[in-house]
Length: 199
Image (cartoon, rainbow, N blue to C red):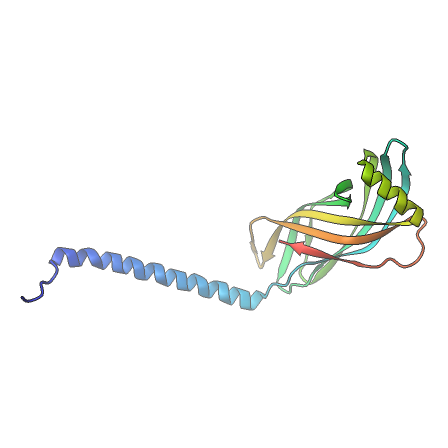
C-alpha cells in the first residue's frame, strides 16, 4: 500500500510551529553569545574585603553582665574590576562574639569606582547591651589577656554598573573571623584579617 501524504492543511499547520521553534532557538543562541562576549570583555573579578585595624575603647562590663564598649574598625573594600563599579545602597557592619551580636553600625550609601580600594572607618557602640552568661564569662577572660577574637560581619545591598547599565540589587555578605582586637591603649601591630565575600 503506497504511503499516504499529509493533507495540505496539516502541512500548513506545521510550518508556523517550525518557524517559531527556529526563532526561539536563534534567540537563545544570540543571548548566549551576548553573555559570552560580555563576560570576555568585562571579566568580572570578585570583591575582596579585609579588616585592616581594630581596637576596643570605653570598655565596661557590669556585674550584671551588661556591656558598654566602642569597637573601632578599619575595613578595606577592594574592587579590582576594570569595567565594573559598585553602588552600595545599604551597608551594615556588626561585631559578633560567641554567636551573640555585641554592636553594629549602619553606613551611608556610597559609590565605589572601578579599580578602587575604599577604606571604611567606623565605630560600632554597645550601649549597656545585656550578654549571655557564657559570653560575659568569655569576655572577662579575654579582657585579662588584653585582646579578644571577634567576628566582623557585614551585609550590603549593592548594584553593579557597567558602562551606563546598572544591574538589579544583589545582597552581599561579608564574614571576617577571627579578628583579634586589642583593648585600648593597644600595643603591637594589628594582624590583617581576610574576609569571605558572598554575592
